[in-house]
Length: 329
Image (cartoon, rainbow, N blue to C red):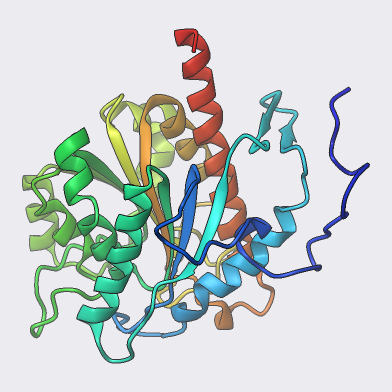
């Protein structure tokens, strides 16, 4: 029987201690990152067009993540017969990028700086927003590493297309990130899942997105196709960047967001897609955005966000280990 780690040291229950992401070590020196995953908070919500409050998302998701932090030897999943996120997966928390109120350009530059530091250290960046505009500096940060390692395919899980080019001079709000991403020469394509109802983008935006290589599926289309068929539409083996807007989920389980949209995904709809991506592709970056905790007094939204991220990380590193075993490494 494997040791679970409870016999020695602190019990370290979720409500004890400081709320870093999953209670992982805090690293203040961004030139000394030695990890497989580095978490960066991006508490910026000046790009919102309706309800603010996503600036408190990183703090809320971190606190919620402590609920899942006390498995000393990883988390065993009886359905998969696998232990995820054991001690061999090194996760650190870098704290937050500095946000300058009213200054989008400087705030985004500070986020980009943090993500570049993570990539320079060879770790996977996990950025917690913040509104969806924080994806813009996250994707910008990949310019150098993509020049070396090749392009990325962006998978967006969201209620909204976020493909507005410009509106009243605004080009870096939370309705613009996917348009800014597809313009990058190192973004080879895009898969947009969950897009539904009255959207943030006019019909011309959908036409433009498809012309630029985007594959757009609604929640109902994803369910009709099924997980495997959806995954088959994403280039197998591609380097993948995943951006998750919490409003992709039904407000019945994720009310704490600025622009909720009914008819969204449920937990396993998304989890199974993420597990498939981890198995078929090389996931090189993640952001999760638009958690605005004030609108959900049950705190279910941030718990969903934390649980989703930790499971996704578990899938990524389990798949990496499986691939190493097949290669005999």
